[in-house]
Image (cartoon, rainbow, N blue to C red; front, top):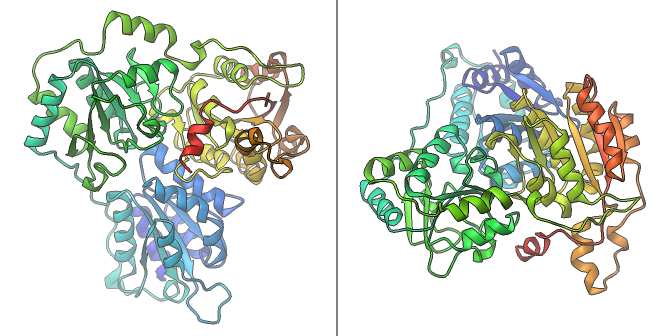
Length: 546
């Protein structure tokens, strides 16, 4: 058996069930071996899309995914998606063929490339060790939650594997959760027992059902209000004490209540400039605690009063066991009434800025939230528009929202939603894009149609790179470089086999209602011509982070 086949079979036996990519000569045999061993191969139209699909699949499924690319340009094409995954600590294994011949036009220093964007690397070196080297790379991706580039030199792939180096199929060892120390748990309990207005903010490290349940129980004990970072949106959807998202997308009431907290605990959450609005959400007398199973994450973005190194679920359970009786905390009748009346952005009054030609993005988003089935998975691209779907489209739980924004690249939203849709096949996938990101990634509309996904693609179309327009326009700078003539994006979608509708007024959404009620035999694209007089409420906050 050749190395390429042995490695492919071993990775599937170790738990890889989905591999995304574009196949060329260098990754042809490896990819086919994985398919023969039982993995599903998802062919994208561009490696950049494939990388983001794999990233989103891993995030939304809770399992590691694989990306398979050709040597040289296959890897460079995928680099933006790989960077997003690396910055997000997504457990992703990138399988990249590698040309090592000095005169090969495909030869680049792939390891240096990966390190430059925050990924870690491994390489197959001998036929005897190849299978174990591949399994070690996958183990690192899973156990350390890292994006790992496994370089597969072409000459090594073609070698014969000695029979003795072909191990029996066996599952990958499970990573043991990090137990917090008794002393750290005792300090955490003291902070909780001394708080009158505690707020929990959960992040990526809390995005499991077990972690959610433990945090809900602890919050009930101490009367804590519950918020999430954007990537964990939906985690506390079922709680009447949920504030939804903390940070730039937070509703006015959420901002008010978080700023009023005397104890803020970040659970698997970086408490970075986005989630804490550059620290403005932290009151002057608030105690800040951070819980994370990576000790290096504690205090990495801001000063904290207490850092607890431990798994989120284990730490919350230990605090429950060590703590005393229940307290009302922040859950007063007045707060409960406020949350019921105005916790959601859609409950905040606004003056509709729609015209006969352009629909207000808030009106659009609220209407779509009512029309589309509640069991959905929402993927969001980057741009001026992104706050509207993130704040106004509700999601059923933490697996209903996929937010690939660590690198802030536009053009990832469509591929994000494809990956999330494959991980959550029982839900309606909804991709929320700006016109810039939609046209940048339009090639993957073919992938949506080919896979038979009943997806709704919503394009918030202001015919511009809106973030730049609203950031630089007020200063009088020329905007010709960031504005464009009107494009019939609905016609583009029809060319890929979509049903499509152009929306200028709420009445045009009748076509969306008809699609939802019908067989949904083809995906639907909504080219929403949105009003564009003002930038979104969170935009200047975003530019402060540049």
